[in-house]
Length: 183
Image 1 (cartoon, rainbow, N blue to C red):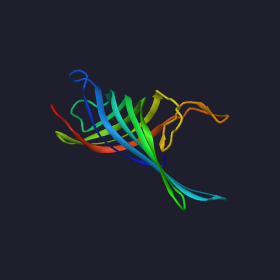
Image 2 (image 1 turned 30 degrees about the vertical axis):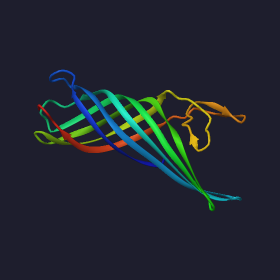
Image 3 (image 1 turned 135 degrees about the vertical axis):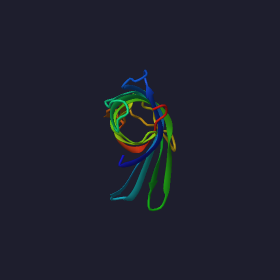
Image 4 (image 1 turned 30 degrees about the horizontal axis):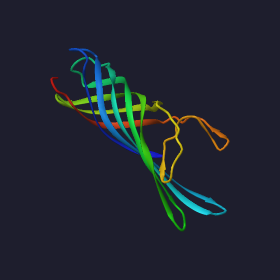
């Protein structure tokens, strides 16, 4: 995919009082899109693909800062449950075809790090990056039917050709607000 946007709410809390290890969890919605115009001897087609991921995550992170500091760098890892769906639109000169992807569930992992800047006793600004492997577990292939298509991310043979498995990976850059409770 070429570009995307993400929205989410994530929480973290110490594993034990004054512990640098924090339990993390959250829910996010990612939308990726790509568009391309193809030309050949029979004409042209404008193809637009949109894929959405509803990600539910649970994991842990390590905070390298001392308690009550202004800069809080952290690294972490999370398990992901991804509900993946999408749509495909093909615009020919004389007609438009719309296809819907059957929603599917895949399990994955994401790793990340960032910096939390405390601007007030209870408020901060957080920036970071996460790299996600969205479909490590649950890959499958099923034939498409009519205007419905499947993710088809498992290795498979089709019409005498072999296709390798597909990996869904993405870099997620983020920024947001932090709210501290009980600090």
